Image (tube, rainbow, N blue to C red; front, top):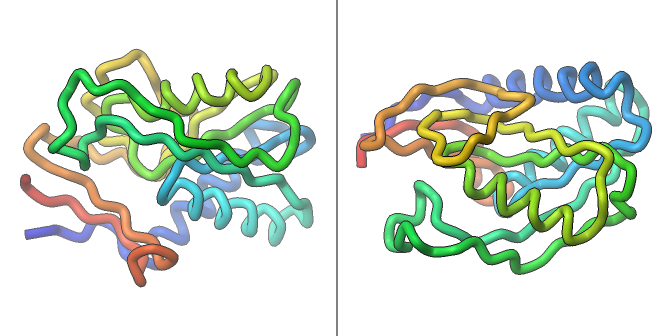
Length: 178
């Protein structure tokens, strides 16, 4: 049975706080590009860009990365499976820009690593930052998020599920035993 950690209003608050952190850590938004990692990271990046527009009146470019690999929510894929990058839609040249990678859950770090590899294949950012809605721990790689919406310590027998209206018809974060 899933236990709700964050409801729709709470998720909106977390994303607003993350937006402020992105603005503050970049001392503004000049030469900043948001890149959402498929699937839910894309919608989170779009929401953060919309909130930036409301707060700062600036349009920040939003790109997407489509990465498929072993993750905590793909139990059927073996641990030795390598990341496959299926595509990137980057609306601007990322050379010498600050790229903020946005994802829903940080777990092992493999998605973030694959996303960084994909970005470097498309250009040479000045800096890459990682922003995640939920950091649940259990890293297998030495990767840390620069901006974390919510830290949720979990066991390896638990799973975090992020729901976004664009995909799931509601917003929220739940945890459940697997």
